[in-house]
Image (cartoon, helix red, strand yellow):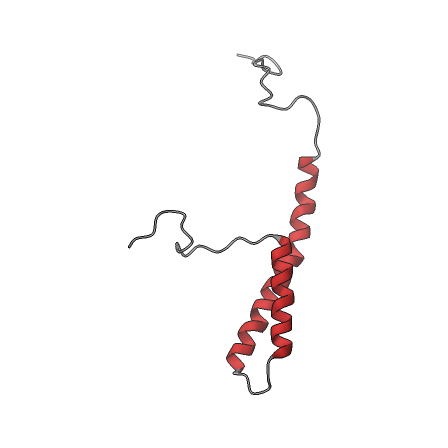
Length: 93
């Protein structure tokens, strides 16, 4: 049976929110702390690698939000697409 476009099995990354990433990071840290000394080194390394990736993503997320804020706070003039039907200024030909 073939997958249709947009199905979860399309081999696309799962998008997670900030809160979901923080929860996953806590869970992975608990998992790493609960690992026994005889746990396979490759498993331990893969968990540590994912923890580092999540920490990097979480550290980069506030920086991305702070750069988006100034653009979103602009309120100069009427917004386009408000339905007035008239252009803000006449075009020069």
